[in-house]
Length: 163
Ligand SMILES: Cc1cc2nc3c(=O)[nH]c(=O)nc-3n(C[C@H](O)[C@H](O)[C@H](O)COP(=O)(O)O)c2cc1C
Image (tube, rainbow, N blue to C red):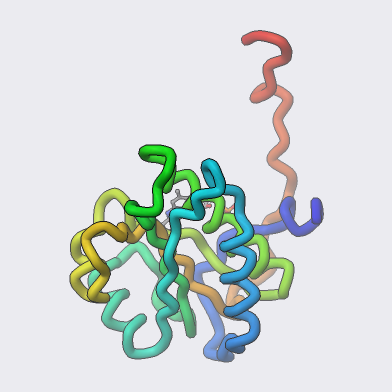
């Protein structure tokens, strides 16, 4: 587990090799097993492949283009029991997708939708107004070389007992 966490790195170039439905299922399951505020699970997911992903990429330029599939993580605002916490739920779900992908030998990157591109994505994918696109995680087999996985641990970032 620690090796998976500490060697995960963002990948933005992918081979055309498809990702299996079973793998996508496992990533979604990992996302839905993330912690959430009062266990509200205030998330929804849209799986995008091929044509839909092409259209999506044309309106969301900060998501890289070559992935065969992507998972859009959305805040389910009506499901919130703790006001304003769906952002944190969705962040935890997004991180679980990244870690599960890496554990399976897949690669991925967290790309931003919220707060800048919410309306355009809702409109393209017919997402209701109270379901807010949060992040987009393109997933595939890496076409990048070896990543730098040197540890970023820094004692300077750690404060003990008080600042
Ligand atoms: C909230 C958040 C938003 C991010 N948005 C983008 C993005 O829009 N596009 C992108 O290519 N990477 C994005 N990233 C990935 C970061 O650039 C990346 O995690 C960071 O450079 C550290 O590299 P690493 O993931 O390889 O450890 C985002 C990451 C986070 C946590």
